[in-house]
Image 1 (cartoon, rainbow, N blue to C red):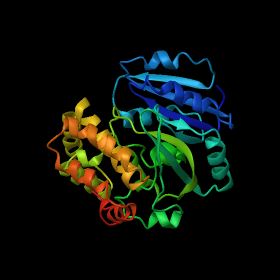
Image 2 (image 1 turned 135 degrees about the vertical axis):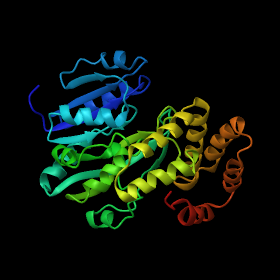
Image 3 (image 1 turned 30 degrees about the horizontal axis):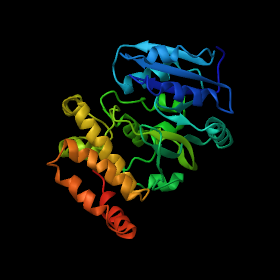
Image 4 (image 1 turned 45 degrees about the vertical axis):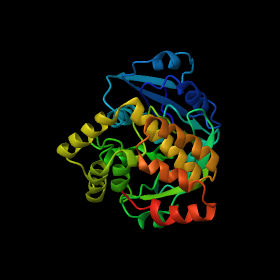
Length: 319
């Protein structure tokens, strides 16, 4: 394949249920000078079979043993042919003009090294939940944020490959926040921003390694935000995070975390209390002794204005 302008970098691990839809959305882009680089991170399901159903010269596949998303992304950075990297996950959906809009911005504004965009979040089944709005969009606004506030949705970003490589790439030790730690380092090297338009649909997925942080516990959050504040993570801290994640890598726990997150989004971000209660009942079935669930259930009967007040004054506290 000749050099291309954009590499769409997609790590995939056991994504057979959703990856075909994700690939279709990339191949349907109105901007066509790209490669879709898929890093199959040791999938044990039918992920590879789903990928091989596509006959398109723009698709390039690299297989590796399961080593985690940061290792897969760094491998992708090494192999990418594009000047720009468009990050994307194997269970999400790109809007048709995503690459065109971001490429044109980057070419028109060469002093920018990374741009994000808004995203529509959906359930596992594809039901719309809410649209992500950022606390800051401009370069100056993002620089004023606390380092503990993640300024971008990872799967919406497009960045200059060489700038990310020069910044050290993704930290293999920063389990579940390899992107956030990278942004902390990267924004000191050039201008960044978020575009005020949704370009991706992000699927909340109970099988994902990323779960509602409230379920991770205080120890996990203390390590994570401590590392973000200082800008690096040690092997010892990484090991502690791995132990917590491994302990929580249980279907029941991840389902509980998934329904908790969906319920909160249907309260805070898109006031639909009936749908929130549907998800809360799912949690109560499996975790009947979790008091926070009952509190959320009671809150769901309050007026929207009061719920918004609670969210704005309590829920946005970092950590």
